[in-house]
Length: 538
Image (cartoon, rainbow, N blue to C red; front, side):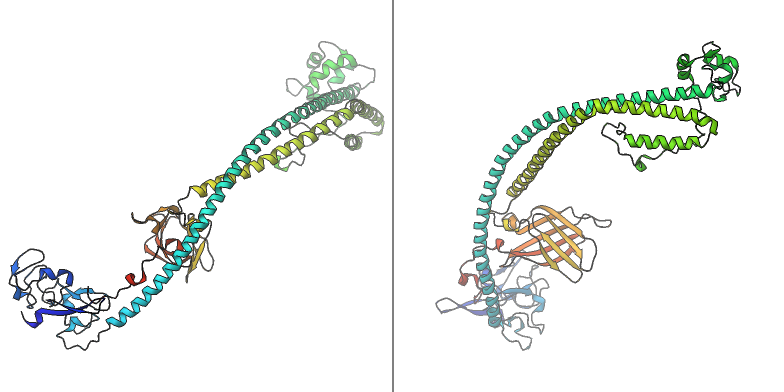
C-alpha cells in the first residue's frame, strides 16, 4: 500500500505514551476493522468486494463511497477529520483538497498546497473554557435547585396545613351560616306580618278614602244637577249633561234619562246613589274644566319610588291639603261668583271627610303599628346583615380552598422543583413587543408602544421527550390568527442560575418558541474532568 493510502496517528494516553494506529486516510478509528490491508475490501453497504489497493486510489468503486474515504472521487463520500485536541468531525469528501481548510488539524488539505494552520488545540482550549463555565453554572444551578426543592417541600406542607385548617373552618362557618339563616327567617316573620298589617290598613284606608271621594263627587254632582235646588234631580236636569247619552247617537233623550232613573221621574239624594253608580264614569263635573289627555310617563322617567309590594306610598296630610287647595283655586277660577258658595261647601265637605278618616286611622292604628313595624324591620335587617356577612366570609374561604387545591393539583416536577414559578410572570422586551410568560397560566405578546395584548396560549401540559417531559412546556388555544389556527407557544427550559425568558421566535405561523432558563432544570453535574473533551483521536 502506498503512503497516500495510510495515515499513522499517535493516540496520547493518560500515561503519556503514544501508540501508532495505522489506517487509510479519512477513516475513523471506530471503523478501522473494516479496512484491513491484508484482506480484500468489502464496500460498507455490502454491494461488492475489491482489492485493498483500490482503496483511496482516487476512483469510486463502491456506491456508498466507502472505498474513497480520503479522496474526493465519490460524491457521496465522507472524510473524517481526526482533530486531535478538539472534537473529531466528518466533512463531505468533495471538500478534500479544495484549497479551504475545513479540518482544524489540516488533514483535509494534504495535497492542495493550501497553507493551513493546526488550530485544534486552541479550539479545544476555548471549548473547555466554555464547558467549564457551563459546568460551574450547572453546579450552581443544581445547588439552587436543591434549595427550591426544600422550599417547595416546606411550601407544600404549609399549603396542606392551611387547606386542612380552612376545611375545618369551612365546616364551622357553614354551621354558622345555617344558624344565622334560621335567625334571619325567624326575624323576618314578625316583620312580614307587621308589613302585611300595615299594608292591609293602608289598602283599607285607600278604599275608604276612595269611597269618601266618590261620595263627595256624587254629592257635588247632585248639587250641580239640582238646578232649582228643590232637593230632587229631574229628568230635564239630568238631560243637561249630554255626555250621559247611552247610545251615543248625539241626543240624550228623556227615555234614556228615565232608564238611568230606573223609570222614576225624579230622584232624591238617597235614590241618586244608585243612579250615580251608572253615570259616574261618564259624568263631567261642571266645577272642573275639560283637561287635556294626560301624557303617560315612561317607567324610567317616573320619579315616584315604588315600594316592594308596588302599592301606593303613604300620603302626607299636608300634601293632601295642598293638592286640594290647588285644585280648589283652579276650579274656582271657572265659576261665577254666585256659584262659588256651593262649590266651596262641597270642597270643604270632602276635605273634612278625608281628614277625619285619616286622623282616626293615624291615632288608632299608626303609633303602635309603626313602632312594631320599625322594631321588627330593624331586627330583621340586622339578622339579614349578619347572615349576608357570614355568607360572604364563607364564600371567601371556599375560594381560598379552591385556589389551594388547584395549586396542590399541579404537576410541578418530580420533586416539585418548579413550584416557585407558580403565580409568577417573566417578561422579555424586543424591538417591537413585550413577551410575557406566566408559567402554568398563559403566554402573551403586547406591542411595545401601545396596543392590545395578544394571548399566545394558555397552560396545556408538559411536552418534553419521554425521558424528561419537564424540558418543554406547551401553551395552547391562544388568540386565533387571521384565517389561521389559534396561537400556541412551546417553552423550552434550559439550565441557568437565573430565571428568565432569554429569547422568542415564531418558527411557524402562529406557533411560537420561547427559551426560558431556570435552576429547576439543572441536573447534578458529572465530574468536571470527564465532561471536558480532551481527546487526541476519536
